[in-house]
Picture (tube, rainbow, N blue to C red):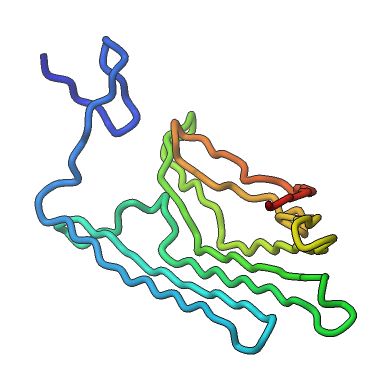
Length: 170
């Protein structure tokens, strides 16, 4: 049996065929990360990724993945009387993602513009074995699509969330 379909189709038995992007597809990318302790009590981590895939004709493919991403996070354990308190934050940025979707009006470009998410954290060391922490993800409650194009749809990313944690280490 021969089946012809685009990437989102299903065969009569419910399985999905793998569709090769073809001979001549090239993916290029680079990733860099650095982390360390610039000074006592301060932890810093930063990373960046860039990748592009093109078919044999030079057309960019796999556009549902961000081409560029940057992530920076830091924590700082306060000095002196405040040494039991640690504060931190993070910034995550990614470039636009897009696809061509087919709808009642024909083919349209569906996309999510580049966006930035901010995160915060705070931790208090109650005893040498017990700590309490609070994390806030997506601090500004940014509405964004984390994925576009799957069955011509989009999936929202996580809204603002707050979590608290009590940790005991023995």
